[in-house]
Amino acid sequence: MAGVILDLEGAAAQPSISPVLGRMLSIAAAAVAAATLLAVAALPHYSPARAVATGQSILEEAFARPKPLPTLDLQLPDGLAAEMLNQRVDGISGLARPAPTIRAFRLRDSDEIVIVAMLPDAPAIIRPRNALAEELSVHGAYAANYSVEAISISAVRWTENGMTYEVSSHAVLLRDLVGLAEQVR
Image 1 (cartoon, rainbow, N blue to C red):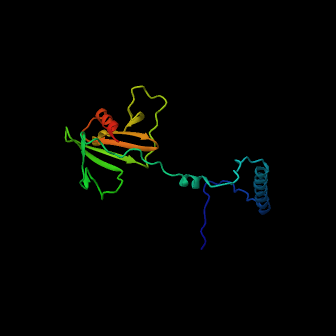
Image 2: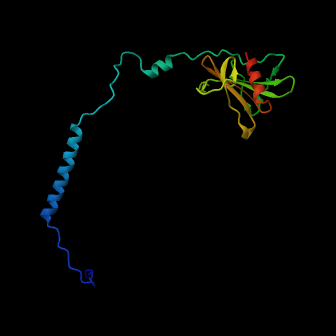
Image 3: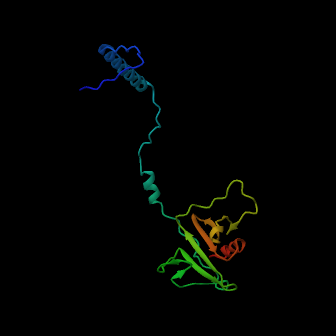
């Protein structure tokens, strides 16, 4: 038994579209699409000029460039601070390396711990155009305040001869850190 749908309102039946008209509409739609594609392909396209490969690629040049040698030895004067030689300082641990990128010092007058770090992968600290005259500076280079209030760390960063350095502490204030950073040799 086949299902039957009853039309109770008595609406007039819609005439069906003839199969010929359906095919003609499909062909017309395909023709419009093809004409659009051909028109877009015929329009002039502007593409950037390609550089003629005459030497090394940009990546090869970047990797071939030697990294700048650090200019600072990450040392504070002996009369000011003593280097902490233990393996663990404020959550930082690891074996000592011949040329460490981070060193911890205990200040002789206050027993506070100061971290001096070389940050080879950090972006360079660049003076903004609207910097004020009283901005921070270390060794004559512009310095930025990288303090984090949420975890109570005062930090100052500066870039010297292509290398970025940082001096930080939990207890020493920012202005005092700038003075300590001036002492780093």
